[in-house]
Image (cartoon, rainbow, N blue to C red; front, side, top):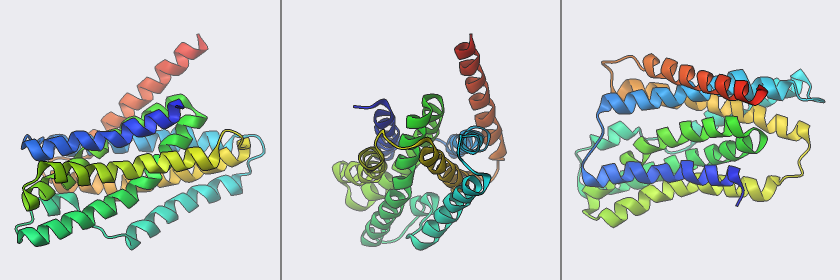
Length: 255
């Protein structure tokens, strides 16, 4: 098994950790969840804007028009998909006080929405790790961090609606499997024989997806989960930690 595919599987599998929190009743504090989401957004923003997009633009044969065009395609594509998919915020679902049947239906819809959102994240993790392992590790970490509250958001309401821990884990794992499926399909379709320009174009589009995910989903969700604290602290910490990590890795590589 390739290392990029393994990273994608591990990132998607983090959903299972959140699911365990959901059925064991040991829910992390809203403050911790919000900080984690901001931290993940900071990692994604720094890697996308400071590493992935510049690397794509400086690839031999890549024109600025194609590079920025693919970046905008990633942005617009994410927002278009986000508007078309069934969308229920996890914290709203956790607070739902309706009948169990309605809660179960809403939980299933949330699982569907999260699964479809997770699919491009799996592609992004695989493509990034295939091009640059250091950046791939960063993206995998950020994706894994924000998959934990997603697993919690699916498993908690499903457990409340059905009373079955097995069903709660099953539906949470479905949302995580969508991410792994994205990595597997990228592995099967893209393969190792792509030209540097094609890889750079995909990287630019992935950077756009990651920026849109951070700005449209992770940061607002962090604010809504914990409105009394500023999610920017998590964002700045994520950027700082990832920036220092990349600097240390590059320094060690140069040495």
